[in-house]
Length: 332
Image (cartoon, rainbow, N blue to C red):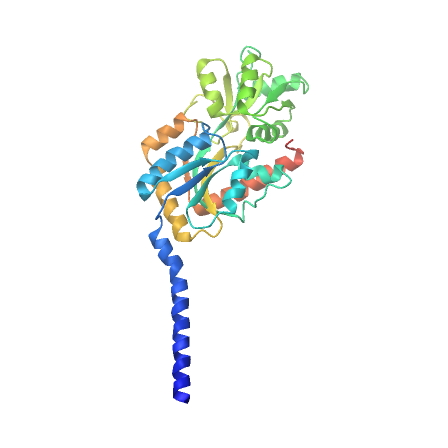
């Protein structure tokens, strides 16, 4: 009887150990087989913009390398918070990714309830692109403003009456100009528009003479001569405007203001999956054809591994959050 009971206990224990082994092995098997079906890549903005373009370029190449479709899905609205909420609540299985962009990174500072925590709800995968921003003026309205010092001198002479615009309150152009105003000791009034297109339209019409714009929005008009670029916010000059000096070169050493984008996944996504996608993206961004396609979209390939992207997220979240608080920037 005792032997029988002991044997039964042994059998039950063996079954339990085997069950635990199966459960423990399941994630490993799932990771080894990944990807076994199409991957969804969420874009938090409408089709046609730089984030969408970069997502489609990288998504196409990623699909080729992973041998599975990468389906780009646009979920626009509220600076990307709608998309971010969706991704944060998605299964962390490697089949839902998102192209994070700076507006979505900073949205928790601007909205009372963005619905996600950038640091806790996502797993950084790879930085993908930089999106330079540029100070442009209407040369008909401001014919003598050809450099950033010229603009600052004009703004000081106007005693705060000179206006500038951006793609909207809380936009990266808005925040960057507000920071630059403090550094340069000058003032200009922000005229807020809802989107880059109406802002550029009125800039071209002369209603507002200055804009801190995404390069992708301003470049065609710079090339046509309708707008004049006087400074770029990135630490280095950009390939699209090699003759335009950086803000740092014009008296603001160390100035660094670059909008950017990168891939992330829901928090808890297996590390082997994150590392696999990151390694593939690194190879994709090293491709000359991909780099040229991004340049045509006004962006620049800029790979960063998961740790580098996580650091960039923390640094920019804190840096621009301080500007938002100091300037009492609010989104209507």
